[in-house]
Length: 228
Image (cartoon, rainbow, N blue to C red; front, side, top):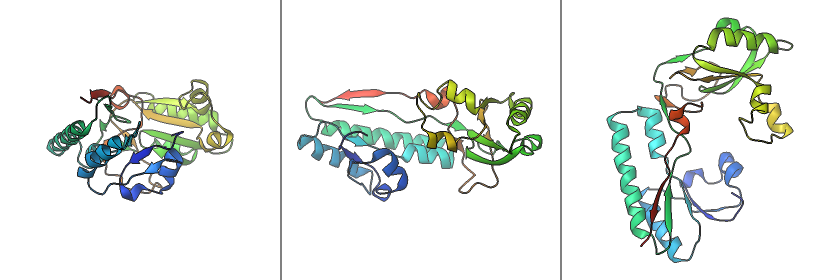
């Protein structure tokens, strides 16, 4: 984060590779029950901390596992209660900002592999279902893009690696190591679908997913509450 600030997240996430990649150098304050978050924040504020970052994963987890519906709505009410508890411990002059890192799209069983004609030009895949990278077999990059466009442009943005770099989808500067990891063609769904890779590992039966560029995934609220 560029500064040594206290970070409240699940205790089991401390020291993970992903945590080290994006939160290196912070002061971890792991919580084991969500009810502890407001207590920890209150103590840190009273100790004079100027900036505190807290992460709660409940809404994201339930959306992935249960989709939109009664379980999701129940989790929203629980998250509202968490925010209310944090509001109660704010000190004078402090501000609580509540936001999310992404939205969700209800996909359910609407998963599909890339077309067979596309897979014939594909050595392997990477990414995830709503931002699927296709890595071309040697010398087939142009043909792979043409086939992917033919078969999937009706439901997805089909974009070459060069276009993604030129249009700065991944930011203004990409180092050599990052460029090397990119595929040759990306399938980025506009519709509520997911592109499956049978060789991938991990759970596939997610109800809600994210990773593409639809409004539902990119437009997230930012709420501000001030302390008394």
